[in-house]
Image (cartoon, rainbow, N blue to C red; front, top):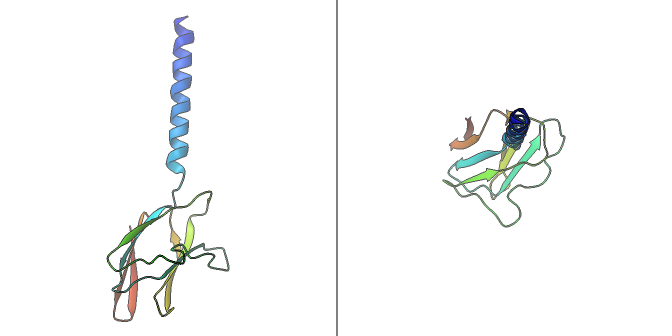
Length: 122
């Protein structure tokens, strides 16, 4: 009887570990975007690197990301790690970064100095 109880407890613990691992791997592409560009970001596009189009604006029609603000970008049901990111200002001028490994990056900080913009990935 003791072995049966021990087996049930071990099976329950194993199922818990499997469920926790599945939850930990979900959303591994999620990241925080930090705007330190000096301007307001009016559009944000995040698209799989293998795609030919930018898909929908992540910010939506009525949302902006002001200089100094940050936002969390979350994913559901995607397995790809390589993503492209593009931001646009109010005038529609855009800059983009390609092949960002969002499985290894959890924070993207955008910075501009004059006409040169960079991104720090951590």
